[in-house]
Image (cartoon, one colour):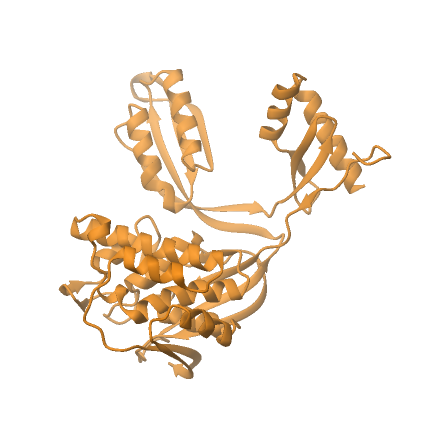
Length: 400
């Protein structure tokens, strides 16, 4: 509290800077780096970071056109190699580089996800995975370069469109494979994908690893104040579509947000209330955005419950497993839907018993954070409604 007894404003979450990958013609590592540079990431800053990896590579950035669209082509010139790297070796290279903590952490996470996908595809332990194409110098530079470029642009969150994976076949170290390749498919599980355009690989394992690791959500462009756009060129120039990845950079706005979510539903008439209550708790802890139980009248006039789960597309598999494990259902309905929510901000206010977070919108709606109020009520042995009232009064005084 201040000397005059009025609440003190402690923390405000500032507007976030977002990056949206528009992968209408697929995504690869070099396309991602090129697009981010085209959108304004520092070329000198990127080169400095990549040279610190000591891989003996040099880098080129050229302006080109793909089907009439001006784009930036990022290229890595590296000495010829015959060796195949394992994940621990690649991790040591990244750890030794002069990178920011966020760039390093993101690059390590992308390679870890790549390793898990390759290990699953070839049924070997992750430590024994031989990185072929993605372990080459150019791929290492593509992945690290994309993470560095996002950091140079000050990006707080990444979103992506549906991913165009292409079709046909692709030549790899393992021979001729269908598109999308097995590792790419594994990386994009539970993400929205489609196939359109020429019969060729549009999304590479490197691109799939980047977007599946870094993107917070997939679907339509979130509401932003648009600041910049960039186009990254792929290797080929297709006659029917621009072979580019577009990135849009902007600041989050208070407009209604529309995102793609997944809905899981199951009708259950032979599970006890205790079992259903526990299942709800597990689903929420595992990443569900919301879980509800609705009374329904089922076949043979039996009363039952419809268990509904709202989640991001990336949580469908995990939450489905919990539903099957914790309830008696034999089937789950799964479908995509659009979710629209007002952009929310958070402030902390000081009350008689401690700090409490308050969520609010630009339209004037607000609510004290329940978990904070409950914790303070239990710690200080005061009624919950009294704590909520204190937080409400503190916030109203602060905003007046």
